[in-house]
Each structure stands twice: as structure tokens, then as C-alpha cells.
Length: 459
Image (tube, rainbow, N blue to C red):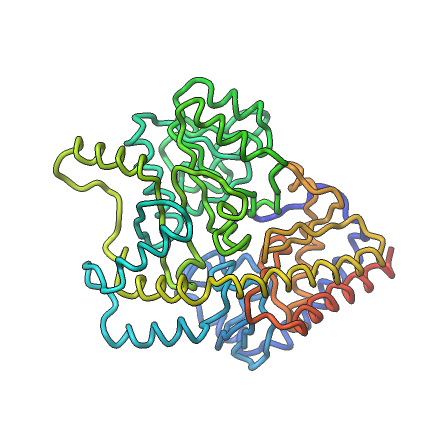
């Protein structure tokens, strides 16, 4: 995760934001006594939660959830929410949709993990190949693992060490990708805790959409792979320039570099991800989070040509552990979840609903922003959208960061949550699922409108 930080003055008075935030904090504490009590009992969890990211929400204490169904959450105090976070994409097709829940319930009674293929394993492999156009696949438990494993294979297949990523990228907990472009130089990411290996020796970073810098970084001929999201999604949304991906593919081929696409967030674009929607031609692809409906699972696929090079490297290595793979990868439970998601949840009809809901949100929010005469804009990536505090779509992570307004962002998220609407705990990302009703979108837009109205009166 990348946390935003203020880098420019807010369009609203700082004192007004602080005053309203203090009021909303008190309201949150009043509305959530059971969550407060449970938080107080979590002293045995480091940072007070089982994953320290759960502290990233701009809340006095974490919101404890009792149930999640479709596009709705219910907290332990019995309060319902319209959920536009959807587990930060993991539940992109809704929380526990019937096709998934019923399949998992059946499989739970028949075994969870055996380190052997399931009856549906062959069919799931065929479904992945047909949908995403890559011939060979493997399963991991998280997208972080899938990216890590695919990078290992890429280095083995090419005999090269260097990885190239884009500034502001997000590829999970992969150390090699925890870098930033600072004063034109690749530097370790500020949050890279406890890493003793010098990741900048084997990782190179350039600005997204900067083709000249990309060509210069590839020119030495030592880059094993470019690992990229089709659009940046974790530093504020940054969309590619027209022609960027064609040039990226041409340059990687020119310099003998593999192109690896991480679709974990951009699967929101359409039924075949951004790659299918825009005709990209990667050598490898990673998809996590939503690919199994939220069950811990990720997949990575490669072309037949790359698979052949991987096999050659594997044979040359001889007997011994590869360090690629984990015991729970490819489990009976994962195969069941993948089968249900690929076969029932990712249909064109479901994406049509999701994309239409996003366009409806964009239209309604656009009216609100125009009425308030604010220099804000909404960036769209299929069913995924992000309210950004700039009316000029950013082309790089640096431009996206320049539009951050952390106090306003924190206020907006807390304000909405107190009114039964949940956004992701960083930036202002809203994700639509097939179960998202129009009244949820109206609640989201009305909440943003009400917050901006209160602030607007202080300008």
C-alpha cells in the first residue's frame, strides 16, 4: 500500500477540515461502541490487528465486521454499509456470491488441501488459457507470491538479473519492486523494512508513460523483464498515454526483455482484464485477489515460448528445490474457487452491470463536482474509479502524488463511513460489483456532496 501525504495546500481551509474531522471522529466513536470494545481487546495482535494494513483506515479504531454479503457490510454494532472497497478488489464480484459460497461449502466437506490435483484442475487450466490467451499456468497463494515466482522464472529463462518497474507501481510484497524514483535515481522505498539486500542493484525504475526513459533503461540489454500494471492503481490512478503499451511491447522485444503484466487490480477493466480489452501481448501475466472470488489464491500464466525456456532452465538446474511454490498452492479449495469464479462470476453480463454502474457514478459525481466548481476529477478503469483532487489526469506517479490532499481524503472517508458508505482506506477508490445497487451509488454521491457542501460554506 502507498499512503497519501499532503503535498499542496487544500482548496478548503485547513481549520475547517480539522474541525469537521474532529466532529466526525466523535460521531464515529459514538456509533461504534462494540467495535471500540473489540479493538481494546486486541492487544495480542501487533498494531492491534491481524494485519497492520487494517490500521490504514482513517478511523479512531478499526471497524469490526460481522458479515459481508453482495455489496453490503454489516458491522458488529449492527450498522449496514454500502461497500465500495470490496476487500480492496478481492471481492470485486461481490462478497460470497451464491455460486462461490455454495461451491466452497461443498468442497469444505470434501477436503481443503491434498497437494494433489483436483478433478477440476484440468478444466480450470483450460478456462484460464481460453480467457487470458496464455498457454501455461501455475497457482500461487497471493499475487505477491505469483509476482515473485514469475520474476524468478524470468531471470532463470533469460540469464539476466535486472528488473524494470515503473515509479508508483504496486506488485504486492515483492522486495524487488519496493523502489522509487528520487531525483532521477532508483532508491529503496521508504517503507522497505528489514531488507538487507541492495534491491537497487538489480531493479531499475522509470516514470510511467516516459518512453524515452524506458528505452534508455532497456538499452544496456541486461533487463530480464519489465513488470508493470497496465495502469498505475496504488499511487492514485494513472492511465497510459495513447500508444504507450504498443511502444512498451516493441521496446521490450527490441532489447530481448520479457514483458510481464500484473492484472491484479486492472482485472476491473473487463472480462479478460486490461490485456484482453486492449489487445496487449505479454510474455507473462499475474492475477490475484479477485481471480478466486477472495479466497487466498493467485495465478500466473506464460506463453508457450516462455514456458519452453522455463522448462530448459529447470532441467539445467538439476535435482533440488526451486524455491518456487508453496504447499498450499493449487489446493482443492483454490481450484474450487477458481472454477466458480471463472465459470460463473466473470461473465460478460456481470461486467456489463459493473461498468454501467461506474458510468452512472461518474455522471452523477460529475454533476456534483461541477456544481461545487472544484478542480477535482474522476479517473475510470472499467469498474474501478478514483476521485482525484485535480482536474488534470495525472500521467505519472509524481503528478498523482502532487494532487494528494491527505486531510481532505481522511475526512471524506470518515464522513462517508459515518453515513453508511465505505471507500478504500487510501485515496478515494470506488469499485462496483455485480450486486451494487443504484441506491448505493446515490448514497455515495449524496455523501460526497454533503461533505463538500459543509466545507464549501467555509471557503
